[in-house]
Image (cartoon, rainbow, N blue to C red; front, side, top):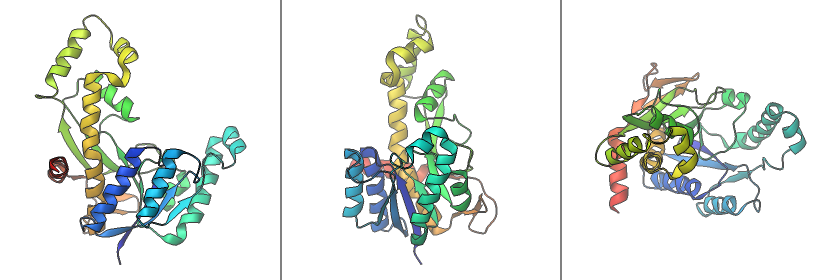
Length: 274
């Protein structure tokens, strides 16, 4: 039987569509020996323009699309208790997707925190924009922490989703340097400005437009799609497995995250040469 994946996304932007398109292509050309069993979107058709574009793409790829609008689902309960609402919403989500089956669910631009019960009942994986042991938080928070700590390296990882946010064990990862030809002038410029301003001033004044911030983000984004592709490939081939919330190798023995730098850098070079 083919390895089956579920796909959860809010479909809020072009990046969400690109992730789905790229993984679908990797399945079609045989890189990932599996299939996308269904796509779940927490937006109704007609709710937003971007999610409509995402839904249309999924349908164009002939994928089963399941909907349940989180915005329309018991809004009064959500205001009264977000935890109770989250549990009830995801109970209904599980009811809708269970008959389609999936050995793993990929959260790919899914903008909700899943309920603890869903974490227990399903194997879900998510991307985090740092290497194992790196900063936690949103991608913006991660990058500012890297800058503030003068980090020389960062990365991207795929990890198991657990009820503790961003605390699940890593499954795969890659790294890239934050020093060298493309970065050193940006670090030097930052240090010069820090002679006159504080880091808080720079963050407030420039935000995501800071040149060093922008380049760190750019380098991370370049590696996100290939890491997802090669993580799903490793799972589908059985090179890495999730057994009772633990990461194991093909023999069933507990294992650490797979380091995928060679595969990721090769994918990036190939895509950017086209």
